[in-house]
Amino acid sequence: MRIILLGAPGAGKGTQANLLSEQLGIPQISTGDLLRSNMKNETPLGKTAKSYMDKGLLVPDEITLSLVRDRLNKDDCKRGFILDGFPRTLQQAKALENELEGTASNLDLVINIDIADEEIIKRLSGRRICSNCGNTYHMDYNPPRENGTCDKCQNTLIQRNDDEESTVIKRLNTYHEQTEPLIEYYQKRNMLTEIDGTKTIEEIGFDLTSVIGKLAMGA
Ligand code: AMP
Image (cartoon, rainbow, N blue to C red; front, side):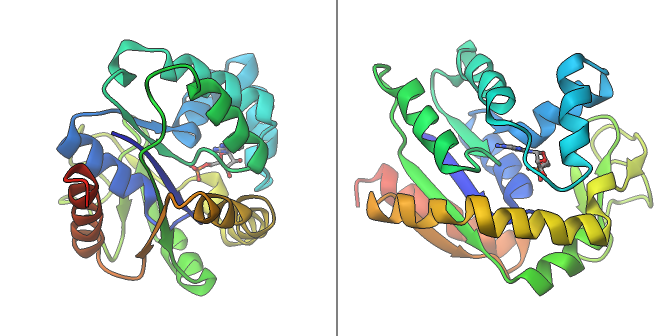
């Protein structure tokens, strides 16, 4: 199964992609996580990416495209994958199609998690991520068992630089200008399913599983 999760920053793509990845046994490919890992390791690519990410801008397509290409060529993607945060521009969507063309693996499903900007601003200010494994929490909606500590690997939770309110507003503008047109792009190809992102994590997970179940049964 080859799935794209679309949605504004903070819509819950990462949380749901992580759950789906465990359920379906296919990898979650998050370009944001790949970029943050390069930043953490202070690679040249990570240093370039940081200057864009800290401003709430998209990093140049050639950087994300090369990361995604390398990742999709790994063996664990043969049975499928969940793209989380990619594509984010029409150019990336077209490049992905070219990349998948000629392999047996075209896209099965594009899901848009829909949620209003005001709710996103509220959500991102409470978001915390694990400094080690990247697992995501929310102080009110999805708190860790122990305050400030990751449930999975017991490392410290931090707030992302780009989750500060002024940067969140810039990221939302970037999303509306550059990524939102992808909704229509996939709608026209009859590939898009909309999911209500205001529901709880469990409810959204249930909706996603049911959409995927129907697709698997050919409905
Ligand atoms: P995310 O973790 O998906 O919210 O991504 C964090 C930041 O990484 C974004 O605000 C962008 O600066 C950058 N980024 C992630 N994915 C992409 C992408 N597909 N294209 C360009 N920039 C990206």
